[in-house]
Length: 164
Image (tube, rainbow, N blue to C red; front, side):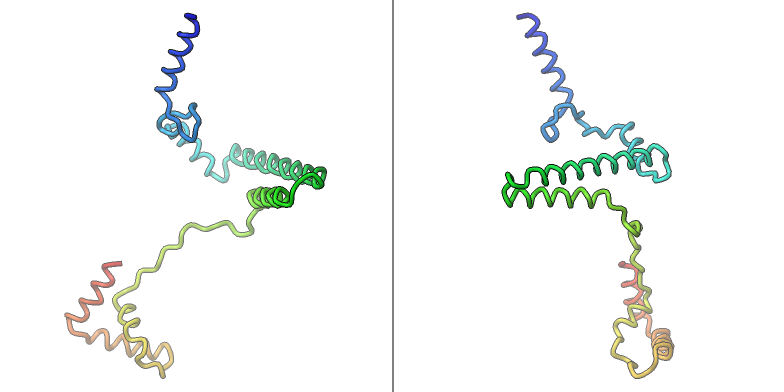
């Protein structure tokens, strides 16, 4: 009886030190985001790190084994599965294949949106003006008009530029 009480006390103490994140009582209260895991994440993001390359290759290998096992199971048990189950297996296989498929073009970092200048805002306002001219002549003419604007109107376009 004393052993059970001691065991329960240990479990209560353990439960007070961890939070129940997603039903997993082994996850620390900080969600596992301690300094070590941050360093591990940083290392895993490094595409040239040999450990990262090894882990990704191992992941791909295990995922291929999983896909092959799923396909094998589907072939062997196709007659005993319902249409919904077969469809679900197919979706899981497709999802797993997408996870290991190498993309031809790696996603680039977010493109910075080009901030417009005061003159470009002016050009947007005057889109209907001088449409009969070619682009370079039209731009020169609009530039001359923009430079001649009174201070109040020009300040309005410069304010738009600053508010981006």
